Amino acid sequence: METTWNIDPMHSEVTFKVKHMMITNVSGSFNQFTATAKTEGDNFNGASFSFEADIDSINTGVADRDAHLKSGDFFDAESFPKMKFASSKVSQDEDELTIEGTMTIRDKSLPIVLTGEFGGVVTDPYGQTKAGITVHGKIKRSDFGLTWSAVTEAGSIVVSDDIRINNELQFVKQA
Image 1 (tube, rainbow, N blue to C red):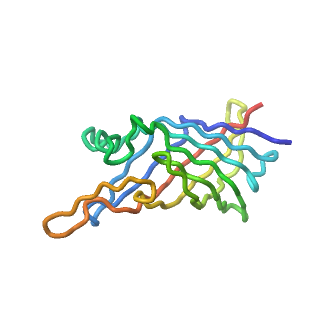
Image 2 (tube, rainbow, N blue to C red):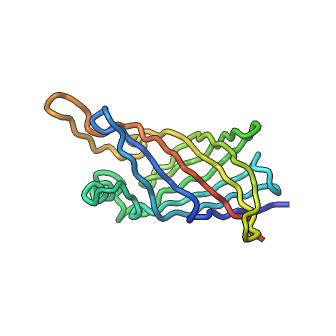
């Protein structure tokens, strides 16, 4: 029997890290997102996931940097308001998930592989059944057309091409 799970945005976070000046990491998040998982009962082996984030909700804690990320130099939020992911294959080995799928940024869709840690299924104090998954991955921003770059006088790259993804996802089982 197919089960639908919707993201619990109050207990989930969609975050990323990127090297700045190649010496430290800058963190950011997307504050508005939706996600759904479809499973056979409570079994996430073979699940399917769909995810969307609103580019306009990007937040790095610095308004000027957020505005630059929303601009045509990076995400071009006006033309491409959503970042999307849809899984094509999910396999589970004990608590480890391998999630293969397609990421779409700026209307460019590419295959990626994410890894997940399945935290389990529990019933909360309000009687809701919840599932927790931590998802990790890495993409190259240039693959998706986010090619803005700058180099310092000393030759250092300002923003790395590698973006590390780290998401804490809590899903609520739908009746």
